[in-house]
Length: 167
Length: 356
Image 1 (cartoon, each protein chain N blue to C red):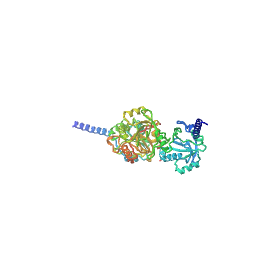
Image 2: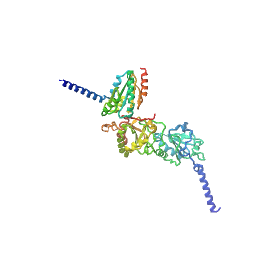
Image 3: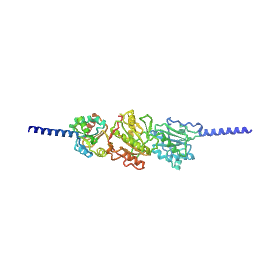
Image 4: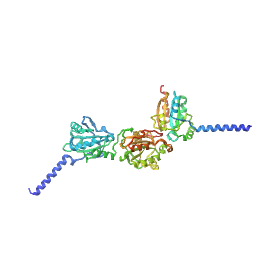
């Protein structure tokens, strides 16, 4: 009886562990309209949307700055969303990278499908090169577009300006 | 006077006469400003009374065609020949001037009669002709054409002007040695992309964008050594080049990344067996002209140098998932004399690392 209970508990625990492990390896997928919904949900906040990829060295290099930005400003009306443009086969690497960097911000991976449609849905002016970061003001309008990698200080300066902008 | 004396006198007279004729037309003392020298600046009026200052054309190639006189036979042929090639000159961004010592009114009549579509400068008194070393003692200019580069230096001196085909003669020189380079331009779909030169990474020699201009299509590819997307396309770039070079397509690779030194780019090109020249764009000036922002980013020009396509090679980094072969389809269309199916496309890529 006792043994059965223990065995059941162990089984349950292992299921939980496996489920947690699996969910950690999975990053939610998103397409262009999904990103628009995520942005719409955050009206009233300044949102930093970063497009990156595990294959992109400058993206990896600037990533800690985004983590720092999120941790410092999340309670001050700023949200950071990171979207990987890796292919779906790469999603475990994406998950691993996020885990390594202790990235707690909302993170997504691009849903398989037309890249060009995705690029244009985010910003018609975006040529598709990563890293690319769009900072939205509190009304949800693009406030700044940053092509290439940036430092924490550069991100912070833009965010402060966006926060200072009157509604 | 005996027979010999007569012959001697005749000979003497002949020599004197021909020397005089040569002196009169200036042929004996022809000493035009030589190649490489700065072109003397001037301000002159054209047939419409409009002022032209040579130095105001800095950044453009200027053709300055001196000729003896308006309305005369040779000059008319020469002017017609230049007139008929004007659209090509304009396409290359070249400014053409005719210049002679007659006044603006005479120029006006000449232009009206021949339907000339370029400015004729009135160098009354021959001051400018003298500065250029082409003023004959008789007071008119010799038939000499100068090609002045965008930096304001003499790039070519044509003393053996072929009046019937002078337009072709000048164009051939412009094409052979690409002096056409406007100081400021931006690549735009449907607009000409001017020629430029950059050093080759393999031997440091200057290579012109259009080369010998024999090709039907020119493909510019902004590439990188450290960008995984660009690298994912190395094999496809090589294969496309091997396939389309024999069909009259010229491929040029350009590396504008400040973090990738020439040596590294040369090694990379060699390792990947690129059959096309790879050029180094120090200071990313050419990338700025094209507004090239990522690698691999493609620009395709037709035989006339007009930008017809801008964007990606195809729609998938993974060759197994390609659904749209955009560069290949563009080349097929242009070679068949058709419009590319799509003029502009997008894909994910790496940013071009610029100097800050």
